[in-house]
Image: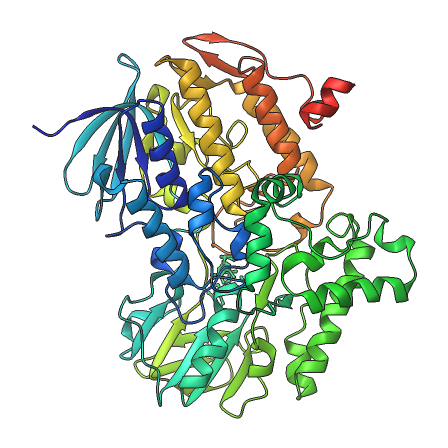
Length: 553
Ligand code: N01
């Protein structure tokens, strides 16, 4: 008879779930993974839209836990495409023989904590019921696509494609009239590719985004060899980066408004020429100082005006209603130039909102359009969306949905209070989507692994006092930044009715990591272990210094 009880159940077989499984095996613990897709890969399994690629450099967007794996894998481009990343994940799954513990095409529907046995019962859409001491949610932050509630969408007789649920066989747009709704990262990557294929592309834009050029190029053998020859040092540099990535170029350590306009522009120009998201780190205060932020915003707008031939279209493509970085900055390959093509048109939804989708097209407040296909690049119910679809019940019969009705809360972003032995990987209240996800995933997996080893099977849970203190600390850190100014998926603003809170932790990767390390080292203050609770640290900020600095202090 198939095994029904495990040390741990892991939900999701993306980067987080796979490494968690590998880690638990190394600890001698039994684990079962459930995955909705029919293969590994998580976000890189589902997001197969044309032009999909990562906005973190390939050499930095990979696992660091195995040196042989680091050395044997070669990335072909500066920024890897979705198919290449998927091949990498599949390679990892094969290499570490992970698939034998994964149930594919299986969605977890419920997870219930039994207070008497202190175990989780997990149920799936295939009617399975398994139990485990620990339940680990590796469900991803961008794994529930947002299908907008546009009247008539279901009546459209052409093809409707969501970027986050792209057909595996691909879509041939040759000769078609295509509507693309949404201009976030997914739209910005896919629109130039679709425009090369389709007869006509009409882009429906609600909010323009700040976009930096990717300047993608084939991986140079020299760069790869240098990186591989110095991997440990490079990984350390990544851990020291505020966002878990290496700061390339020459970022200033001076405040942005303390230098001359010429010096500032020269630094932005260097970041622009280098490409990628690094331009946001040109000065240390760009995400904190609104005046400084506006200088970068205006620099980006000046680039849009240079690239787009029609001044009216250029102006519509210039973001003006939010600070740069407060919504996720995008990186592009030929996005703005695409609007110089004869077969591409931009529709400003602020001037003419969509009224409805019809059988053959779309009607705005001003016009009617006929389309063969509609692409929904409309994003995700981010960070909490996938957890909300699982009926997760903790102590006293309280569900996670009830607990999070006014916004998600979890101690360290790792454990929601009232849900013993339930861990979240890159959950709300942790750096997650504000960092190189690979770095944050590995940090959480390793922290959880160390924690389970220390527990030896005992029950752990966050105390209400610790969770409150962590949420207050996270809110205070966020309030000092420009992030809350953006109506973004970071704040739930993209989903009608979703509570508005800033969901990630913006204290930076090194500081967050230091806090988590200190908490593990000090015997897990703020948690109750086997019913024995200890108070949370008096001051999280004091724990943020890297260990060597704290020891020297
Ligand atoms: O989603 P988004 P995404 N009517 O939410 C619009 C990561 N990612 O899939 O801004 C009309 O950013 C919406 O408008 P507005 C990355 O972290 C990374 O593009 O809400 N429009 C917006 O323009 C990224 O941030 C990579 O006003 C509607 C767009 O749809 C995250 O995933 C690649 C609408 C959604 O943009 C999400 O990116 C891709 C409606 N009803 C994704 N509803 C890379 O690594 C929504 N919109 C490069």
